Image 1 (tube, one colour):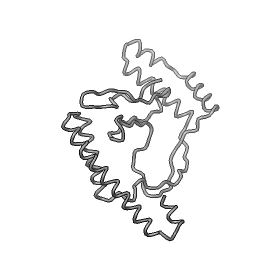
Image 2 (tube, helix red, strand yellow):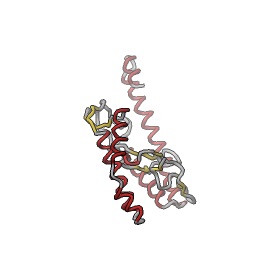
Image 3 (tube, one colour):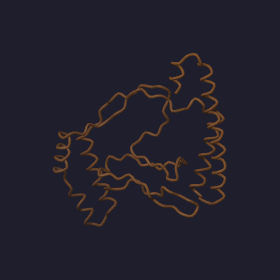
Image 4 (cartoon, helix red, strand yellow):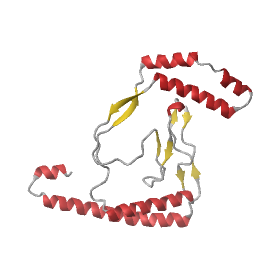
Length: 201
């Protein structure tokens, strides 16, 4: 099992620790690992192999996937067994660890891509994650909050923490107020329509 996260995931004004991680037994298929500067908890969220592009309004598109089954696993094992590792071994003997690692990974990736080729698949329709009560002003404030949090993460001083905490608390009050106002307005519009009331819940 190898870790995919190598930077601190819990940062305070006085400490930085790597507590959270995602372990893998197949590092060759890990395309990327990400630590997100988000204040949703006191631990930074972590991701691997995920498309971080924002979701659009309802869309239907195509993506690729790999079919991993017993037959393909046998093909993978067979390719690995027939691979010429002489160059990798020679680089290890020469103590050229970086080149040896790159040679090893290239062999593994090549075998993996051959045994488990990408095939197209249709994605299900997805809807926008944007909440209807998030006004342009709130979205702008949310971005400001994120910038203050990122500033604190990069320089975890007490001053930066206080600035972020104060702004976050004010933003939370405004967001809750906007959400309540939105639902109150929606219920008032559909007071006599039970179906629409249920749809808005």
